Image (cartoon, rainbow, N blue to C red; front, side):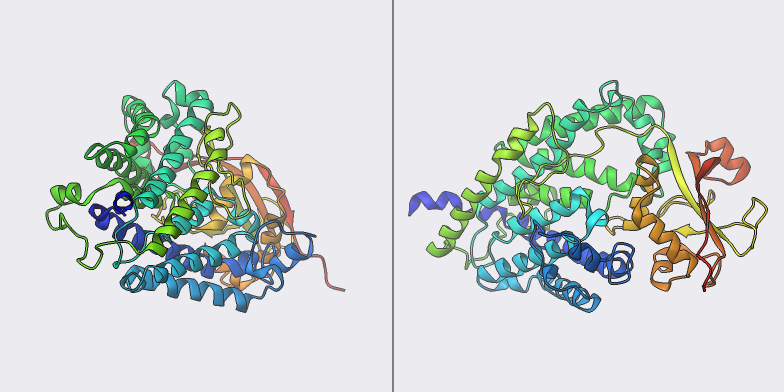
Length: 483
């Protein structure tokens, strides 16, 4: 079947290796993050317990293994299974067998993680969750070392990068004026959800550099993605620009695995000859000798899933060109063919919710309040922000959203209650417990304005942040007295 030879892309073997192992590595991080945080956030005694959530919905619209039963033990089994399967894919073990072996491995990761996301409620309401799911599903059809990389699946992965980048670009153009007048980066590095160790230095760059950053962002998201489908070496050059811009975002912030996934997916457009020209250690003809042709049954599978993915692309395309463009939305229960986007508007001021407790009986301002320390969220004004991505600190991210929405969230009141009882799983989510395991008598939440210190202020005070108290978000609360 000479016509079918076009579906084989042996010149993209290096891309397949990066895609399979890279996506598997991000699944590994996602399962590890869930294993460490999910029980305290959503487990049987979590802030938003999954059993209560399942009991409160008459019909759960999305599939999950936990539909009929949830327990922390079962959840940990799911995570450990996901870690084991993703570990074998990182090592390349399933890829050494027939193509159905990595197919089953990636579909297992997709199903297991989807089971977690679909009961994760607000703690799993991030765009990179559906991005990981969609990438894992498509990667399942990349085949194994015994078959050439399938061209249509590589195109579908490039199409996923296109939706991710172009969708983000369009949401910015349609969003806040700051993206159109090139001032967005005057604020973004300082007000982004979780700054990294270089965010302050990026914020202090001259304003003309920030305007160039915004122009570069528009070029990378609105122009470059179209060239992912151009002939080589243009496609590889487009992928390289996307990778470079995403690594800049990695260096200046913490966005879980969003940027790393974009980096990995961009390799779908990089051919072996181009990779070899840039890094001679990469073979120009990587493909194994045993991958001379594609079996008919595998060809049928590839064509069928390609047709499915193309059909599911109708709604995302429609959304991209809609005046009412949705950001990070799924149009089906399997979370395939999604639409993506981020930061349609940029927050101009950084307001942080500072959580404090005291042993004192009278919770006045002189009660000796002590501040809880979070792992990634700014708190201590002298502390250098840490680099966490691609690891995802879910509690810290939700803390950033509180002043933008309302502090009167169910999970936040549950969190304060756990602090009053010195709940060990909850305290393990934090960097600092100022009471060393003791139970405070009162806790409260204050809203404070944070801004990065100038270089002169840092030299004078040693502070990386300048903090100004604004208002009492939640007055002192305590547990009701025991009978």
